[in-house]
Amino acid sequence: MTTPASDYRSDSEDANISATSSMSGGYGIFDMGASTDSYNLDEWIDPSTKTISRDMAINYWGSWYDYTVVAPEDMYVDINIKYNLKWIIYGRIAAYGLEPGTSSYQIEGATELNWPKHYTGSMILMLDGNNLKTTQTARPIAPDEFQSTGSNFTKIVKDTANWQSTLVNGLEPNDTLWMWPVQGRYNTLTSRYNATPDYKSVFLSKGVHTFRIKSLCSSWNFDCMKIVINQTSGLQTLVSTNNRNLNVFGGRGTIVINEKHPVIIYDINGRLIAHASTTISVPSGIYIVKGEQSAKKVVVN
Image (spheres, rainbow, N blue to C red):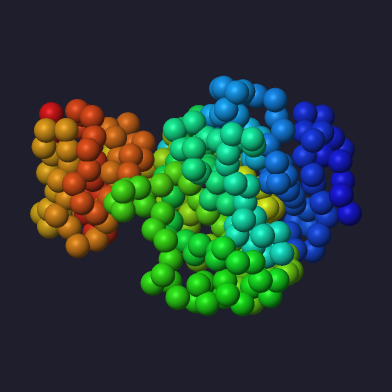
């Protein structure tokens, strides 16, 4: 059963809220974007070559919803996105997408990018207007040949060694979160969280904040967002921990990291900057680098 979103909120009449037992509260937001078999929004950077910007692509093939939360105190939180999608839809889009070209569309600066194929089942989570970096490091890529049973995709999902890295330049966390169907239940709607939090140690200062779920392309359905308190904030608490074994230091425009495990980097105001395992470039300033058992303040010139 599909219920008009305007029954709940007057400013969301275009949202597809559907009732299904697969969703946590019995309802979910379906069709997180437009049809992927065309681009017919009359917006172009250059209409003669059918060139569009990335923002135009997101505005057409994706969708967004805002959520307001109130933090009772400064805190760090872990966040999971709960979702579902069917292989019969996802698999076709991920296999074929919509080929770019001067008769259909092409992305500015990436004319060969098949947007629906690459970004189906993906999203960005924004906090107060800023993109959050995910913890995701790899994802399975659907084969170019669509099989209704999903058997060829099952082989890919099982062998994580063949997954494609989602890290930027193979090192830095990405702000794009990819999703795919539950293995073995490809043609049913089974909502799930990923095994680990999609976003870790996100800093929320005391007060009101706005999260935006920003779909880059359709084929997936949004169930809910789970926010769990990781730890209360306080840079004084962080820097007072034992830091004798944390081998990191600030350089000229960099934070040099010589640790076996990734560290979390915050600016002096407690805002998450990055998860990193090797040298990272940052602007001049004071940073807090937090390891598994300790934390350290570093100065970057």
